[in-house]
Length: 428
Ligand SMILES: O=C(O)CCC(=O)C(=O)O
Ligand SMILES: [Fe+2]
Image (tube, rainbow, N blue to C red; front, side, top):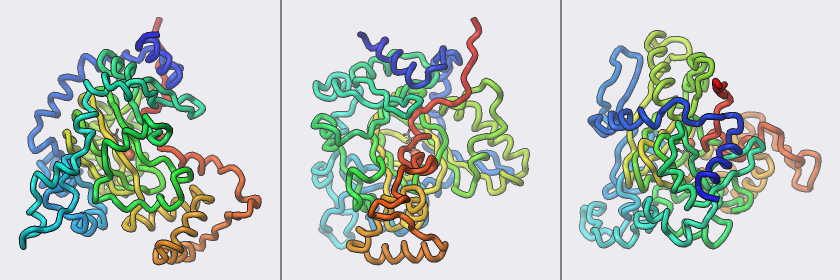
């Protein structure tokens, strides 16, 4: 079976009722759209509010733009993470985020290219489009590119997916979102290709063990026009997302806006789709128009959104609670991880104690041993909210299967390009 048949089968499983994946003709119009975005000044930063001014070149406060060459982890934690400010950080895969011993009084700026090259990610060489197609080990690996209606993974071998990526004309193509790094030796080699940036070293879910913790790291291969619909990351985790190949367009909305506002509820017409490509080209402009018409009242109160382009070698930091959507302007390859650190611990704890009851219990036990001040904090939050942890570790009634709302927090469901419920009726 060739790549076409493999791709057709994957598409049928992923979105069985969609008969024509190319009916909006985006493969024809998209090059002009993406070129326009790539030609924008100011690295494509656009800040939109309802205060009259439609667009103004942002002074780059959001997302903040940082260079790993001159930003220490401490500075990042205090000035940005602790204040929940989204960031674009340059020079991480190039190896500049590892603090080196200061050689001169001015300390942080003394890092030489030699130090950095020791920490440079192998991904910069191994994750090129050509290499992914040809790499004798990786090309044979089956990676997740969709989900069927029972949330079962749909996989394609990388060698087939890369042919699909180069040749498909789908409006919103399949997108590799693979988190099975630990399954076998081949998958593990991907883990050796990158390193968690020093800014994100703290990973408190690690305490519950690899098997029990929720999925948290994904290898991403996105054909042009694929993307991720607007969402907040699960369990109030924050995320970092490093791009090795291509360009991604992002939109961010602050946490105080409602789901209905950022999804454009009421603004999507019957029969229209809401994949990332539709969201960016059609729905987002309507949301901004509606926000203007409202004069910033009702559900658009305090409305603002931030659009920007992520380029090769850049890392985006998304603080917990921020809405975001992503569109791959070109073929892209990258990696993303979600995490809980001391800075977002409160929010993550509150979500986890209800969303993952059993795990929360084990987590608390580990925190008591290894981070007693956080265990204390968790208990304080519980008493503040009159929250009683009912999980019975000895297998009582409460340890049975999670409820629907609980199991939904297990994966990033909104995330891989799970197709919208609006299915088209194809005229004969
Ligand atoms: O790179 C992307 O498509 C965005 C991924 C994302 O938002 C996520 O993994 O939660
Ligand atoms: Fe996300």
